Image 1: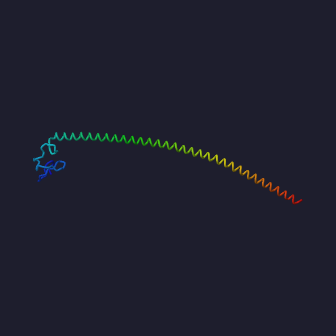
Image 2: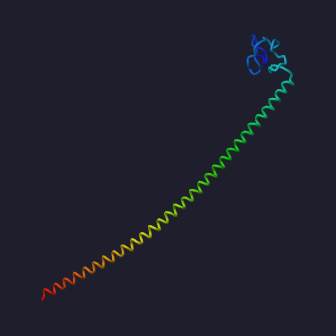
Image 3: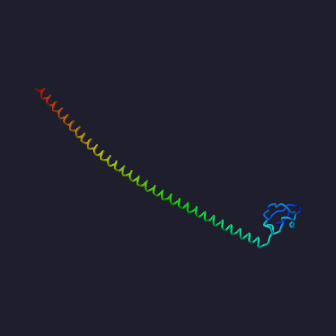
Length: 154
């Protein structure tokens, strides 16, 4: 295949990009290297200008893409900053709630300790009362037995 020209021995033409170009059966035929904008010819200046234009377009598109990516990156950083702030606030709230619950538990613990102390005092009083009743009952039974003995001896 000749670059930028006709396929050897045929009537179809092929561009430098490998695409089929209609019409013409040789390099010098219709739609051939006649300087038109078909990338099959033209002066070196025209081709150079096209390359420069493409470079400018590509540079501009790259700048647009870079700007878009920078903006999206800034948005992502803003979201990350917001999430971190929300997590810090949540941690602070949870810490305060844990301290509140701990205080409540400690308060309930102290209340339970006081209740236990009060119960121990009641149990101690009950033990003393049981001991007193037992002692009194033993003393009364002993006295009754002694009286009974004394009465039987007479």
